[in-house]
Length: 246
Length: 220
Image 1: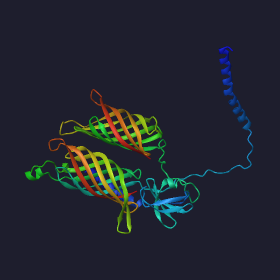
Image 2: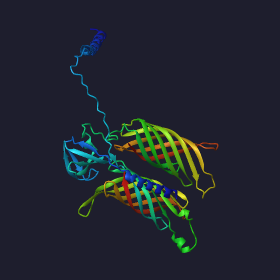
Image 3: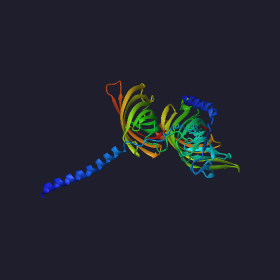
Image 4: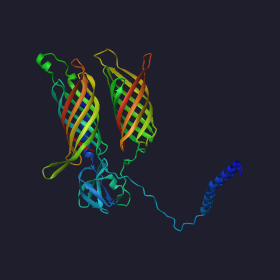
């Protein structure tokens, strides 16, 4: 039932968001020898129109690295941002398209990741966000859902990680952090109470670029769970995930 | 000549040869210091570069409805919501949430009154976080006038399903077709397999729950 409510909220949010879509049109002058207009936002779509150098164009909207353009005759088509990098606005200024260039491996600030893995025998699904104050430093926050045979749970952590060679295609990293672990044993097996404990981890991993802005990330973490019992618990966790930077 | 003396002389020469260019560079630098005064002082202000405030539409959100076959519990009407972020023209990430009400097993039907699950346990809700690949982008022609950009995509993800009073780790494998009706509205036809392990009927087994849905999404 909570899922249903969440879905309803999502839908209502969507309906509220749709009328807000108001395009900001940017006027520009083509500086490349010619601008190719494609029928769709992708490299496979056919080029149906070409706009010459010096011709005025209107930039209508953007999807990933493709920009929808309208020429003076009203013909519309999609062009890649690389073709617009030398294009000028009508006031003669260089046109700047926001967001890091696809080459900005060592310059990005925000990263998101989806991960899945193993947490002491339980399966793990999680999402994380990282802020990079420096190219090799990651401040990370993650939330994971743990699904085991005998118990389920949630894990939330914040931490810091150091990537050794962020400009390399594959870069090793180490991390430290802490958080909260909630374990809910399955009632059908044993009559135990839910418990929430604090936890800390040390981790080591590898990050590799699949494409310019897309990373594959593998990590091993050792957690120490500070339980209210006599002994602390040590837990090994392995994760594999995709990360993307903005 | 004494070999020791020769070595000393040679090293002296080598040192002198290295030092000589250094000295001449130093002299050049000193000589260049009094620069000729500039006739015209350039008064060019650096232009402030403003990023183009274009409408970027990388998010896609919407709803879907269809049918899900819950293993051993028949097929049920299913509905839910999805939100996606498009990284590149090829790759996207997607979060999906859906729900359905499971039917009765054949055993429950035949035995008459024996109920395996309570009503609330029959609620089948799932979520997953997936990565998608637009494997076959293209165009679909509708009549002679209309061409709609399309993509056949594959998704792979992990999530959780709450069913029969328990949460199950779920692997979601899907394939779908996305048709762009206009610049911001898209139609989806999706087929997904929600696979999870269940020990509800005795042995622990991997159950496959196939979901076929029709969806409507908006880019924003």
